Image (cartoon, rainbow, N blue to C red):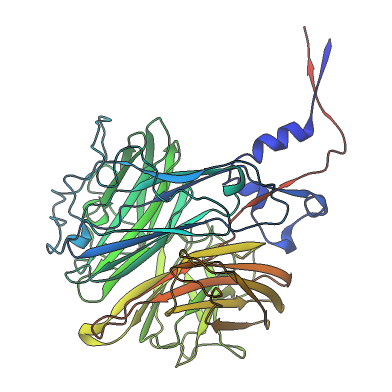
Length: 529
């Protein structure tokens, strides 16, 4: 018998080399066991981000902003950060930003169901192998503009000193057409499971899910849609093949003959991993990117409902085997209240429930808190999102806020302007203290930090600090210092021609560090010869 000893430190270092290891970083402080609390946290060594293709509209312009915050404990080692165009497989899919009135969604003629044959597509603008948005040093954002139609999806990696907390934001303005509005999204890490409550297959909406594969082998993803009565009938194959380092947009209304607003999409990678983002465009009320909801949980937080929201539609899905009974509360500037007429919500297992909350904030900023109603049996987990409308009549604009996980340590919104940014912080439990730091501007300046205390059960909506003497887009980083959990979102407003154009991005934890348990003993493997 031979005894081979493995180093515990070596094993966890391999796990800490990349981001997206949810088992090492997920969960709240309250859920952490004593061993995890005692673990050392080390910065990640590699990050991957995927940016969907912004629009094919001839009247669109997109700003990309990339940033890695400076961190204590991160050695100034070599590293790189940049993005490259993905291959495009979207020739026969109508883009919602093109303003052509839509695709043939009633019979599915124009829905791209993926490159089943693994065929190759050509790289589009920003082309070649020249990286987009390469960073020179942490703490200083870089930005670029793309004014041509057909800008590609981007696949990026950061390593070394640029990996911890690396974030990229794309912000697109479409001046006219059915996609008119401000569409923003934070580029996301690849994963294997995504939930999108709030999507639509209705005739008034064009919702595309953009699937991007960052790896050198093909990935396969399953798309399933759930409505008020359960899963919608599929009219075509729901399995999508995404070729290596490619992107495939799919119009959701081509997946089913059933037309329904306020349904839930689940994207599951059967093989490989993908990035998934939904672009939702209303023919009358503009549109935005709909980010994925936080993982199913018995209690969820939807942070940052604007004070001047003219309507809000809540969409909730219960993915488990049990029905969910939820209390609905609005955490405002001073306390938490129950919206009149919407004290509770019952969600049947495997079904989507939606309620119209109207102008729920009544002129004050707030956040929605969904918690178990109580009763017999365990609470059921849910996913949720809120569709928010500002403006009236022909001057309406829409954005989406998903259920958002708590900030364990830090989170960043990369693209902020001299005017129009609102940061929303909500403490659903105990009072919490946070530090908000404005980075230097893309064109210079110095960072500025301020500390805020958020009372338990309230939302604090504030204009974030601005860099000192800085110009150009800048990043805002939120760091949790003490107290209870904190959730956050950032709204960016760029009004135009009487339309209150805006976009809202959630700020989940950036997972820039991983917990590495102390090596109390060796792991041993016994081999029998």
